Image (tube, rainbow, N blue to C red; front, side, top):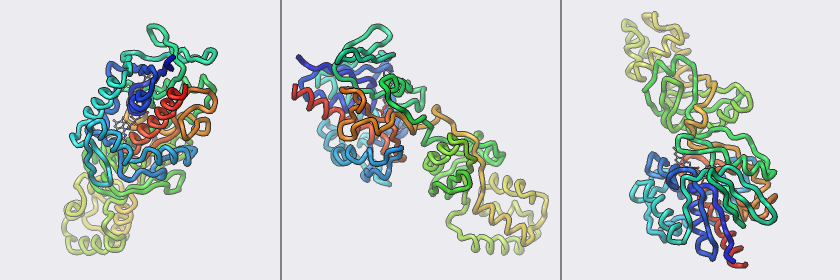
Amino acid sequence: MKKKIGIIGGGASGLLCAVVASQGDCDITVLEKNKRVGRKILATGNGRCNISNTEITPAHYHGHLPSFTAYALKQFDNRALERFFSNLGLEFVSVEDGRLFPMSLQASSVVDFLEDASLRGGVRLMTDTAVTRIEKRGGRFRVFHEEGSVDFDIVVIATGSVAMPTLGSSDSGIRFAERFGHKRFDPFPVLVQLLSSDPLCSRCSGVKLEAEVSAVVNGIEEASVRGDLLFTNYGISGLAVLDISRAISRGLQRGYRCHVQVDLLPDMAPDTLKKILQNKSKRFAKKPPRLWLNGMLHQKIVDALLDMLKLTRKSSLGTKDVQRLAYTIKHLQIAVHDTRGAKGAEVMAGGVDCSEVFAKTMESRLVKNLFLTGEVLDVDGDRGGYNLHWAWASGYLAGKSILASANSS
Ligand SMILES: Cc1cc2nc3c(=O)[nH]c(=O)nc-3n(C[C@H](O)[C@H](O)[C@H](O)COP(=O)(O)OP(=O)(O)OC[C@H]3O[C@@H](n4cnc5c(N)ncnc54)[C@H](O)[C@@H]3O)c2cc1C
């Protein structure tokens, strides 16, 4: 008799797992709560789907068990991914930082190819079906949904994380795993905007610049990166902020005081900046500082800095004023009290403890024939295609393992 496989979640890892496993003689059903599979994939990379990266290494991944990703990433690296998708008909382009996209620059083409390959492989796509509970009775699983239940020999939990609930995301996968005795590391949002009540942020709202931003947690600099910084009404955003958000989010989760330190003029050495400001303050002694500073920084930032340092009313700046100003431009501190949370995050860190899952198959060490893939596990990647790549690679291993067990029975 054919083995019955139930994949809970028709997202990145679930669909890839289904396509791989469908090459064997088994009966596969994907149960997806949304009306269509792959809804989150459609939103990735601003609708363009940053599908992977040319530099896939474990160093780009985080979690409590750093070695866990190594085998999957070796078995299914970016070349394997390109081969897999080009066999389905998809072509790729790579852009700066090695980021890979479908040549169409449309996430929908990735979903279309996966959906088509699943259906051609005989996979049943049960959409609009939210799974509510999974039980194991004897050697089989009973999967409950709102309108009944289905029995399976093998179950894959591929439900992703709660990041961006507007896309139908849920934390149900972690809860299902917990019912089977798995431990979890509490999820926290990453690749997320940061909230600050520093008035400078709202005053400078809309201003975007290239800066060096550092995450300072409990007084220690934990991450630093150069890139886009965007001031907003609620705090700070931009690619550089997303990149350091993990350190801040984890610090806040642990109850630490966190701030972001910003170098507003990263191309200028501190002494050079001081000299330039000193010269300007002498040369333009008769002009208000806000006027001549405007030649170096956005006017909104200049006004906010002068107010912050109580220099606004001064008609000219003395040596000490210049020193304070130069220091603040290079070391602006923005206190952060929270992140925008799951609703703004691309990814949730944390999840099911990977030490309870076999790294070579993604099968649970606690429950035979139960597999876990993608973001439901305690693995999160850097920005740049790494999170989707983890979903593909873990889905691939689970699919291969299911294929092997179906072929051997
Ligand atoms: C806006 C946004 C942009 C992103 N851009 C990128 C990018 O460009 N590159 C990148 O690498 N990563 C990106 N990511 C992250 C990436 O999309 C995820 O890490 C990846 O999709 C996770 O794959 P997954 O299979 O674990 O989960 P998902 O792809 O989220 O799939 C899980 C599926 O399970 C379904 N589900 C959940 N609970 C149930 C249930 N109880 N019953 C039935 N179905 C259920 C969900 O509806 C969903 O379809 C982005 C994320 C967001 C939110």
